[in-house]
Length: 343
Image (cartoon, rainbow, N blue to C red; front, side, top):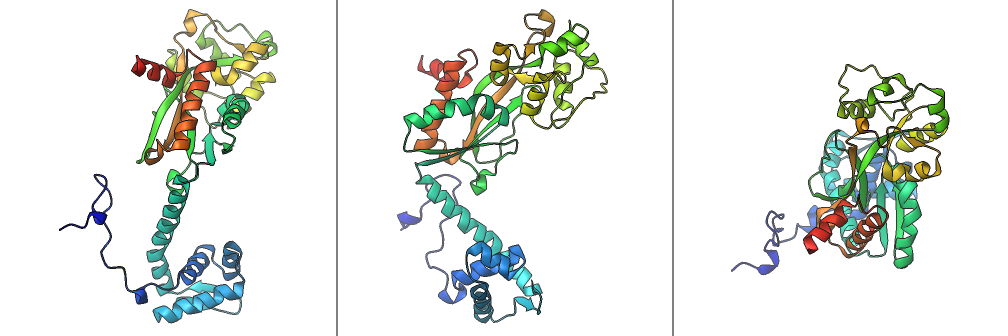
């Protein structure tokens, strides 16, 4: 009869481990394995000792213990350095993945039980111009939760638990969002991407009456020229473009350059709303049919599929959906979907 403890819980889950644990003689002391792994990765005993918070003499002793346990020389030692032997390199390649798996599994189970700390990675523009002014409302309503918000353009590695949540922005005319296996997302908002410039800049340049007129302007770019090329193509300008202008690498930098009269930037309504309302920036072509329809971008809420309904992530997701809908009722895609399902 099948032992119910070892039955798979879900389709496609990993097979159950063998009934008998590995022989004690086949598994060296874990501290010795940790020391060896750290020395191999960091290429030195002192660096490994610093990383593990141990004295370097302790690390050396662990290395000798592991060599005695395996009965083979794993480390070449000289008066000035150490290196892995051929057998040491082979052995480390075999155990490194297991060490990573143990670390990730441990972090995973710790994070599953942690309902007091929330790590959020976020597109910098959204973090600076919207999230930073709103996150305090979530903290006030959830005083037991410690929130860490990191603005970054880099995609996180969810497998190694770099973050719990990632909020990303993708233009609909660019490359579609590609989710790694094991991730899940929902759309938070669809926002118009618009060309903006300062009143002083516009007053100093020829009038801009159509999107094509922007080709004669000083265009501000992020890390490449693709953003403007795609935006222009979405407005019917498919010429072989030879675009130029400053590359500033991040959206909030192009926005700041536009505020200071350096040229025309692309932004979206959620990020640039305050600057438009204050008059520091002007939306080029607003109300002009030649600039319609708008080209949209999408803010996505992304997390691990297996943590989608964990209490803290679900609590934050619901708060964020409602907060976006409250400020931008016409843009809150997720809130619209929720209302549709409820109806």
